[in-house]
Image (tube, rainbow, N blue to C red; front, side, top):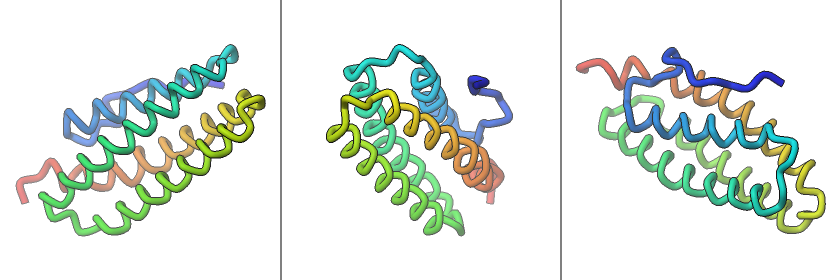
Length: 133
């Protein structure tokens, strides 16, 4: 599988949000490793929790400050991600002996999220955030 690499075209025009997105790229990259052990997957879940708390809050605040008209649907997507993360963590805790399959499922979901949310939904607000309206 081809590893995703950050490209400037992925930028949303906000350095902090871009840095947070780059952190998600790094987490996805770590999940590409075939030698993941249970403790590494646990650390990745902890980092995902941090990502969700920091990134979603920062992004939603910035969108609200800029009166982004599609804020509510964007927030719903964030809630859906939180729900998925909680379910994935629960599954991991119950089936840690099958951590390779779970980490692959997490990888696939995050890659899909990255391509469909960050590179589509987040790009939709780029012009809004970088304009002087």
